[in-house]
Length: 212
Image 1 (cartoon, rainbow, N blue to C red):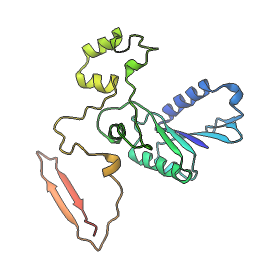
Image 2: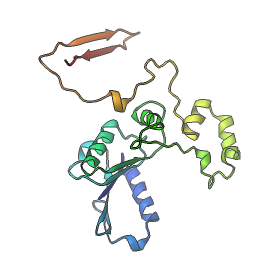
Image 3: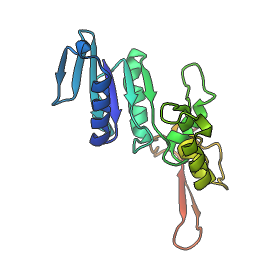
């Protein structure tokens, strides 16, 4: 049992169409277009699921999940729900997609997993490595044109796949997948509140409890 997950139905349509195009017809035993499910043989069942509402990623525990275009609207809750769904079967989670900017959980995860563990690895495939579209690689005329006409940050992020965090970030090691999670309020513990007035109307408020 496997899932293919995308944020929107449009992306799901594209992923399903690519799957059907790549799949040899003789491998498909049965399909149900209503619920986007496919049987490839009696033991291989594939479902295409939308992550628009992450709470719908529940009930079943697939052996593996592919998240399509993880950088395009897929949020951190979807990531953790996918992790929790494959956990009962010790399954795998594969995520792919371009980075839409250098902030957020996806670029942070990609950067952290470049030097990850045996179970957590990320790989960056720069656009020039697609020599089918760009036969000259990094010296392809179109790649050189993009490098010449775009900003350094745009070229590194959108063409070379390298996150370029904004300059002046205070906590450079911040990772949403590590440092953001749901916590419960404990009525027995003191509550600490800090306020950073900032400039103009924008300000930050921090609320914390310190567990014993």
